[in-house]
Image (cartoon, rainbow, N blue to C red; front, side, top):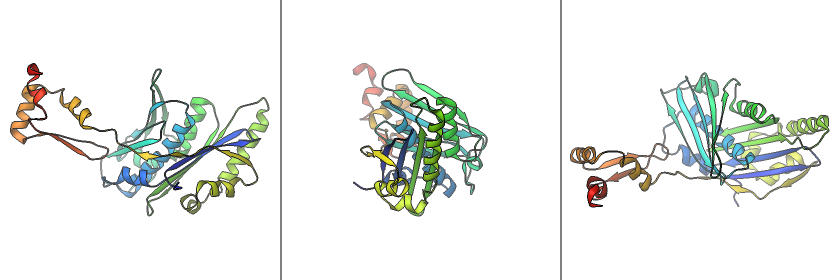
Length: 286
């Protein structure tokens, strides 16, 4: 298995903590491929992709997750959609061309909205003010305020190689000795903080984890592949078009020859001629 586009989860045996490592290349490149994003926007969208993968892997659910940043800065909003299978897509809506870089310079005063839609059960939404200087710090703040679980996150981007990555260490409150738990967590955070960008982008997960934690007992679970997958389809477009009346569709066809919808995420255009729209143009005959 390639060491890119893979998420690894692991437990520190004899320590009160767990960890994750995600290394992405193809999925990130496919998300930005058809968009002319500025450098800062690409970097932040890459960070948001890696962060969403880490967040999804911490949650025990089957369903969909959306992590959105929105504010009053040059970027109107930025969003990554995914699911428990680590199938991801994302987009940034930019108000104006900008050379700005960094979370607060791009999003401005804003919030991070995390929406979870499980296949079973009610949807859940959490909102966190973007009050920290980095996305990693804001996400750590989300864990501490929503779950009261200490979590540290590291995010990396290398636009020259088209790669992004992220790591997470989370305290596991699984005993009465809280002082020992905190000590374990802080020790592992210190080790993780030594990750160098060139290592996270060049080394397979097993080798990187060994370099970081060779003195610890680390139990690594089966890796999970991360992939890019847009959820647009001809069927969904037809559902959207069905909201128009037969008269409105007829007018569009007379003027343009077809009805077209372009997906914001992957920029695929779906075109429907009169034949394809026959059931909508003559609903009483079907």
